[in-house]
Image (cartoon, rainbow, N blue to C red):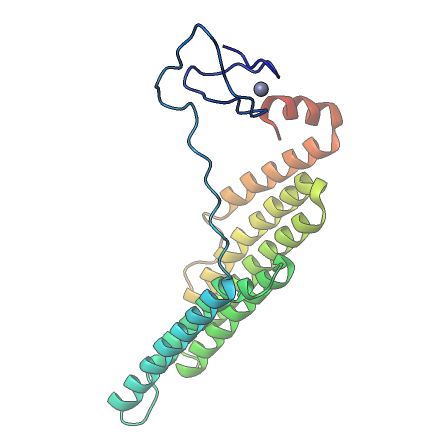
Length: 232
Ligand SMILES: [Zn+2]
């Protein structure tokens, strides 16, 4: 059956045309009682104001931190022993997952570096509390390295929409260098051995992937053929 006004095809169960609203009537066909072909229209739920949820979350974080600090202070005879770590970790989670939502349009160019900065501060705190007996010289370059690479990728992708092949190419090569850096740091910190053992393999692989992406980015016919095949 078709709508007399607009010609759209109608299901047998329809009482009126879904497109133009014309009443469906056919003198010879008795309208069948069947399941309607689409669910009834439902108004989308009204968006709740995120600020209220964020406020409650913030208070919850503060309550947990305060209870930890108080508990620690009570049990350790007026000193802060373990609760600093908990509070620091809570602050880190808050900065990463709650803080950006306070802003209407959180820019990753601001919040990604902030996350890594907060992580570095936390590491610094742990190192200070443990009187420098912690692998700060190992952990800090590790966090700083991955922080810089991630920040560069996120910020460049955010602002240069069409340059993603160049960005990922650079990121792959940098990650390759980073893996070698990790092994050098491990060797220095834990005095394992002098030469590089495992890091050269991922480094070479990442370097070659980076070069491949660069070639794809530069050679237009190649890029277009891959674009058709893989929707790159
Ligand atoms: Zn119609």
